[in-house]
Image 1: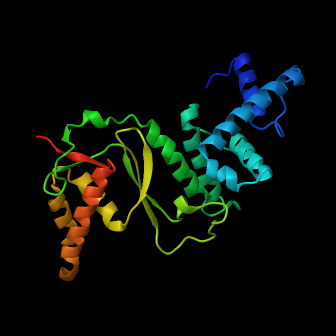
Image 2 (image 1 turned 135 degrees about the horizontal axis):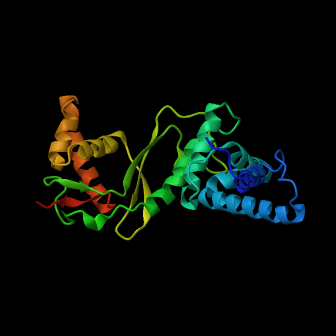
Image 3 (image 1 turned 120 degrees about the vertical axis):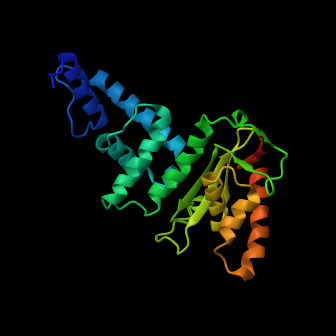
Length: 255
């Protein structure tokens, strides 16, 4: 690998200082008064962006710990993109890395970060509902449901949608938290808590895009005890209709 040009070496050294000014000195010959302006702008821009992307985490974290967390993110984590819209994803990756390394962060923190990031990610998703041919008034039980590209199934160990200042569980409950986040036709992003049947139904519809709602349900209930199949079919039909009402399902396939 060829040696870097002098100006590139200077850029790397300057960036390293901005990322970790407490441990990496600024390049020689630079006036500290001027460098301080860049230090402040760099930190404040990223800190403000993270605080806006993760309002719940920010509210749960006192100022001293929050500053330390942001500083650690800047100094220790190698981000894979410079895009501001992707900084939230990178911060989630940083928190996951810390959890793997045995940090003293709350056990739910990485999952909460993912939950908070997802809302922005779905709002920016370029998937186009109108590009999918479908009948919005079709019967999603007897017809072939068309899934929205802007609906994401989510599963967490912790009840991330309930975490707040007066509810910060130290241990994950026995049952996982299952959610769906979706952006509707009015570009509104919303979460809905669901059960295992709901997520299984989405999974089957995704795997079998030509199956009718009834066929997808038949596939699911086939392994159930005969005494509960009728009730499961009825519940599944209600789920399909609820999904259509929330634009998780857009309607039915148009041949």
